[in-house]
Image (tube, rainbow over all chains, first blue to last red; front, top):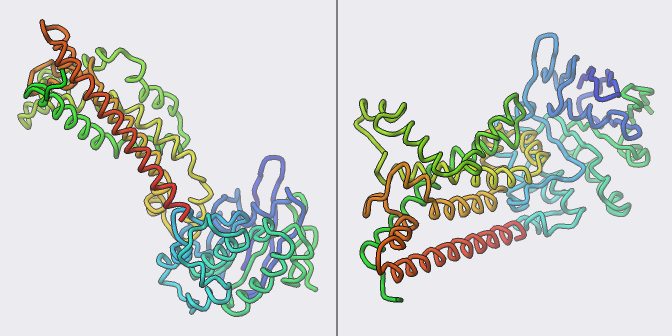
Length: 216
Length: 231
């Protein structure tokens, strides 16, 4: 993964460049307003950089010099949002399969039953999102993103809406997703505790700039 | 007074239902499209489009009827082309009544659908995009299903408005019994002839009954969808 993007956002001028190895977890860490979410949104194609380049697994997603700007649905990213954003009109199973049907070309050997078992949600498949607890919703959101066969998983404060006990429970899942399915993860959080359990590759941000890249 | 409807009254009732049904059905695709454009896009001239769309709501219906006559009458701007090339003329036919009702009900339809589209979280659409769905698929698999309750409400409002349409209809297609005489026109006619009171009252009660049924039906459908989401 190679990211080098610039974007003027309100009064914050985002200008970052970083890269990471293909299978690990990379964390973007910093206070709110540091530009973490904007960077992850630019990788997903939900926001457009003013200039720069974004490459994932050697594939060009954005390059202002050659005028490449793939739409989000062509980027093959799995995005886990802070609020989960499950589709309320679909069952848990419908949610999990939504992206899977659309990305049958790429295959990372991710098995439906395996993911569902790993996340501990087989008993929820026929339920509607509204009847799930916060932790269950977020686990389904992880599953939905993973099952879309992404080249990278983007996670924007995926645990921020959960209480501490649930967070502790979820962290091993995230590590497992990464090691078992060998999908790189770009993880955004303002909680250093959370990040330190997940990875050694930490990029510290402030005011849209990188202040430190820790490789502990 | 509560004797069954006379053939003339029954004709008027059936015609009204037919006209309202087709008016809603024909304006629905365009209405949903425009509502989506107004809810999701920003472009120069948006307020002008919004204003034009609302004109039928604020103009006297007779003005709309007259404009329809000027545009779609046999000698009208568009009507002439239709008549000379295809031999079709909708002025003074039930299809003309459909056009009049559709135009008059259009703002209500678009307003209601737009409100329900505004209520769909745009971030859900983004989530669908990141999962590999293109803009059209997102619309049909996320936006549309989530705004169905609002679309139904809009259809009911438009249906009711079409049933009540009077001014534009009588101006554009006149008041021909059995052809363009809808329920409100028949009711009006009955108030203008001697001994028409009983017939007028019957039509009046029928109008109330249909409106109530439509509202109750819409309510029930709304509840069905709410239950579907809670599952």
